[in-house]
Length: 79
Image (cartoon, rainbow, N blue to C red; front, side):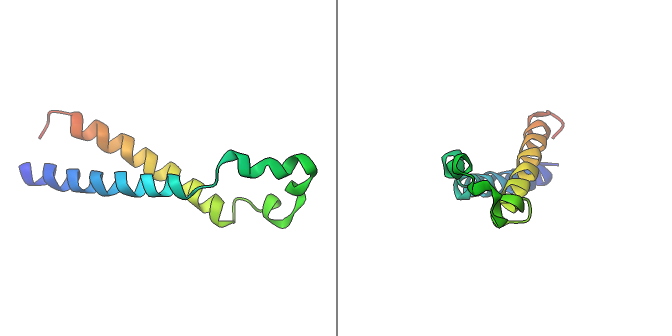
């Protein structure tokens, strides 16, 4: 059981590093101020979910869910 706990901890550390990098790669909310002047009607404004920024947001959500699940699993005293 101790080996499983070590493996989960290693996965947890890798997930934490990946989550930190993904959050830092995302644009800030101030980058979207072009919407005031109507720049949101561009191709990238309409297809935000298909762009690189949209993919980063989706991946971040999944990694955050994994982070929370692994945190709960590691705090259970089953191992």
